[in-house]
Length: 529
Ligand code: G4P
Image (cartoon, rainbow, N blue to C red; front, side, top):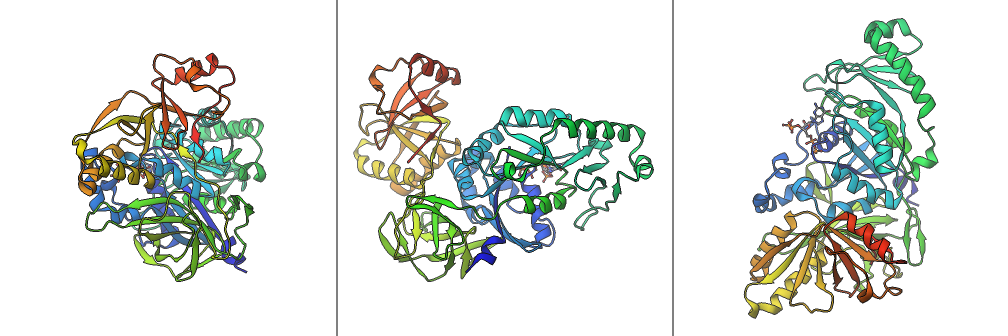
């Protein structure tokens, strides 16, 4: 019934290491969608770059960052949803969870830097889901690493095959444009003229070699001919099935800042990526085009302002159509309800939605009933979408309460904050809640925890940083006697609130060591709920 609407939707996340050009690329996308007139600021740039101690300021501006976490615009008959993956100081488990709501990912890589740490981490989550991953190698207007080396690095470091869709001719001051392998033509580079969408480009077919040679010069022409030959022989053939299963990443070169190669990328990307994906539930796979509305919660955003203790639950619509005011069932709460103040984001404003379709993301007012991973469906049905994994925190601290009389508030507060998914809490194996270990993906969350406990629960805490950086879940915990594990000197045994055993390590090297020393032990980087 809603197939037409649903099939025109493309929902993707942009992943990158900070400063690779994610914001700039997003701005340029929006420009094509006509969502903003000129590529103004998508998010308060300054916001993203605040020092840790300034995070409360960030919260004051939370409206801005919430608004920009999902953007929707129309282009060329498609309805596009871009999910922002917070980076910089905002990097947190939410960044990973956002990827659970996307159907594909665009990976932005700085051509002068190659694959960087944060990209590597985010890529792992995309790979786990097997979603299509498109690579945009950015900043070609600056000196870039060797093209073959860049591709090689992506293949080796990330374990995905690559297929260049276009090929750069030079870089930096000698950047002449890209060769489009499909069109067998060179698209010439020129800088954006101020106030316009893009600079003037020409399309010079390879067949017209004299003209092309004249334009890019003999040296670049000869090199291009050699590289095309090499690339045709060495790189993986384009295969849409491999792309859609995330095994082959189409690669594009461009320069977001000068808006070169962005529209080319967008056009190819929209053709190659998928319509909203079917999602697994405990009753089987649910197709997005099923008539009945369903969704799952992937992010909960607490309002830091004490006067407004509301939260927004972000949900990904997985099937059917959402109508504002309709009755839905919150499966985990076993309650029929209306979703209040459903909202969607458009460029720099948020607005109340009256309808939305599978593939879309909506934010709803949460009076404190939703948890990450919860399913919402029609009142007459009951099923649960596959849960969202727990992602490995990388920073750990012991939490001590300063005033032990406030035990109850402390336990309540820390549990609530953990339920929102901002932090994970653990205990040492065999101890109670007296001593709690907190794990976070981004260090900013420590400050958030301290501030919120003080301000919302009136509890002062002391955080003592621990040296651990690696956490592993024990996959086959029923087959293993934890007390008999042969560890390393830097290993610590802990448990989560459900009593699942976990191991903490200071060095990644020790993880391998412990696996070697304990035959049959299976460790996982993600926790399954
Ligand atoms: P991020 O969201 O991934 O963190 O990156 P962002 O887009 O903010 O870009 C980081 C910096 O890189 C910005 O410069 C931006 O202008 C620049 N940049 C992005 N794409 C390109 C490109 O294709 N070529 C070149 N040469 N630079 C690019 P900045 O100086 O940090 O910020 P600003 O003062 O220019 O805004």
